[in-house]
Image 1 (spheres, helix red, strand yellow):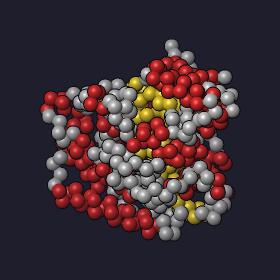
Image 2: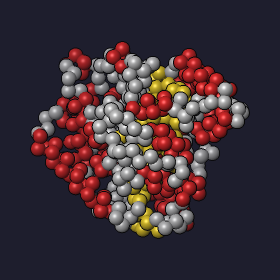
Image 3: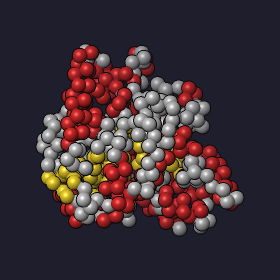
Length: 472
């Protein structure tokens, strides 16, 4: 029965709580046991507090006993990336420079929304220091490994959250994404990850990475992703970037299918070198969507690689994040984070504004593109997971992570919604993800297409071998 519980989605758990087939306490303990059993191999969690999690589950259980559950996620366990403020637990962001006491008693916008719906926080998940790169390791917690092969990376910066969902340690997890940090681990770990439109999910405190930074859900199914969006999209006055609430029911719009949609399929954006196994898996996904009734047209969106502009914006954000830290604190930080931040700090104002100009031009181009095409389909990444503990693959021509994430960061610059959905495995048994990108604020359509694809080509019954491995 325990393996059945670990494999259940949040939607299934909530239904079993209602019909009293399962209790929130039983489920919380089962997941906490799974963390103890397998996370020594992956290091997805940096904080687990059984007493607090079970106490919150017990309160949820009592509400079900009394026939008065409250909220969309009452009793459902959620893993929280360690960049989101949680009042009962410190938020270190993988850094020795953060005073744990200074973060207690505070609640972020996303965790406040989850709390209103009576979630059970199952623990905090690992992140690179200050969320600065596309793999997960930091000076406080060490390296996070891939659930399908612990010799490989889980991706980042929401790597711990990706691991948690893939191994049944949580049916849902919170992630952030300023250059791919939800979608990268979603692809590498074989789960679903949505980067919502910028402003769709309130995010507070504001990120030092500015308008690149998004918060969103990471789940095993697209259905759970939509359920979590119904919670996360609730208003929070503290986020002054948030758009007016439109009260969209993402779940209600899932099942309309893709018939009649016009989807642009771009296997390489016109300039990316893609692993042949990845390209083949995504081409097959395009065929599936066409069989479902979408008009799938092979076409590139027509922009050149915005890597240099993204680098100015992203690393400028990193420099902003550590601007007030003196030499002694920088000595205990990830030296590569310090290096890129100090380099970015030497950019001129015109360098930075030039990157802003390019970002605005890219937004306009994609807005025009979506006048003709409802969605853009690409690989999430051009490769599968590589050796753990590295920023880039072995023998890679560049030393920095964005060079192997060319499909993700452009859409942080544009603020568009983009989802990664599993679409296959390579010859090593490592997951491959497809990416669906929509026009700004058309998150519901992105979810709808992702759901249609996942229903037609489900990989949800396939879990990592480690899922059932007993800790040695």
